[in-house]
Image 1: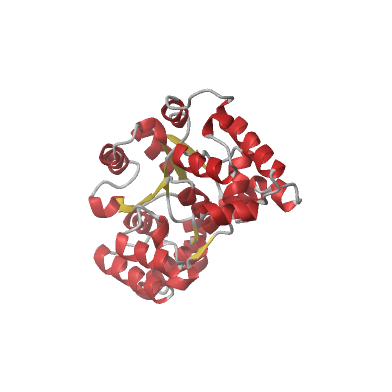
Image 2: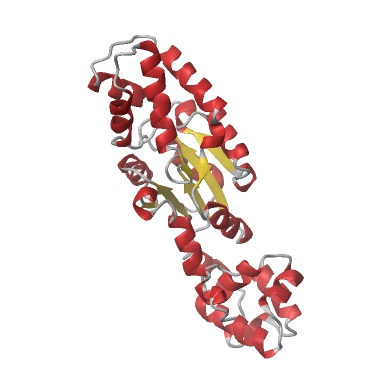
Length: 293
């Protein structure tokens, strides 16, 4: 249904000589959003469709072959995801090298005999763990014993806070978030990273405003893959569980979503030249990029 509506939108718009840019300006959205509507990538809400109909000098019936649409919005929307939940590290933010170097720096400050490069390699081989578990796992593998975990974590926080600007977004992240928010979707972060530093990363990269809620599973006392945080979010949202989807980068993330019984997509940014989201954006906008309006 949504693809047919998009095709009809393009047909009516071009017949009236209105460009995507002009229509976007009248609607108060982006030209990219109009392209997504026409490609069937984004769902057009009934209120938005009513605005479009007025601009194009027609009625919403035109988009449904003359049939009333009052019962279509609910049934159609149930087939679309309306709540998108993201992991942070190595999903939205490129932090693998920096985080590995931070752990190596902390451990070698305490014990200079520890191999800095080995710690970085060990960190690269581990995905999805909470920070304290990372330290415990790596120290065990390098044969290091140290009981004051709180001191390690505090030093780790200090180093990351000092150089938080090194935690850069992957290409295409802003565009993806813009797509989702302009489509009226709910967007969340649910991660094992502690919230104080997490918020600093989001603010430094100017994306904090895109998220309806930011959740630290560790701070809540239920680190992934314990599904408590996701289940709690779903229950508080008032949305159907089928409307949720989770994006992450590790087996822990996959298990996390499975335990909460929601759909999920797991991917590796580093196997996609760190530009998976950029590739998706380019796929969505291929016709526009090629001048096919």
